[in-house]
Image (spheres, protein in one colour):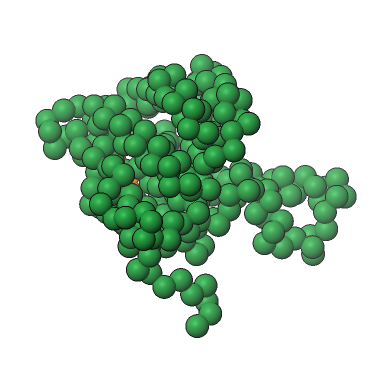
Length: 238
Ligand code: IPE
Ligand code: IPE
Ligand code: MG
């Protein structure tokens, strides 16, 4: 495994956790077994991130487009994510991880919404890694929500259209303290963004791995970080 001491650790990492379904079907199992197995990868990634001292890790758990899946799979994911929080929050909390959810709450079942709020308040005073869980999240929906909030401020006379700049937009995102990502990882071989963090990844390094999410472990995270260390970030300069 790549040696953390020899590497520059990126501050903010976003992960598109993909390939649960394929992990299961490759083994002749129903897709939901892949989601179940993914819990091990979630736990490993969060604990590794906390240990590495990341400022923030953001995990894509359910997109605004994932409602298009069969009702049974959607229902499973809602219950499963609530149960996962039941099982894991105490461990994350004891590792000083601060949990927040990004995305639109309204369409998610009430029991899950309560669990989300409870997880946020349990870990709210923690000072370690910020764990943002993107749930019913879409990058475009986030920008729409930001535009609406700015529009309200203009209507109330608190904001002038001409004074809106990039900082104004950033300040109206779901977690304004975590805006610029250093590294974005997607598992399972797909090379696309799927509506994740559109504004925030403007200058992130993108890393795609064929490893399916249920198989992703600390060694794979370290490999992504090692590759990040081989990149030359220029931000438009020379
Ligand atoms: C990621 O795995 C989990 C979610 C999107 C909820 P998938 O369920 O997308 O797995 P594949 O892409 O079908 O293999
Ligand atoms: C992106 O994965 C969403 C999550 C990981 C939660 P998808 O599997 O839904 O993305 P597409 O459909 O391949 O673009
Ligand atoms: Mg997928």
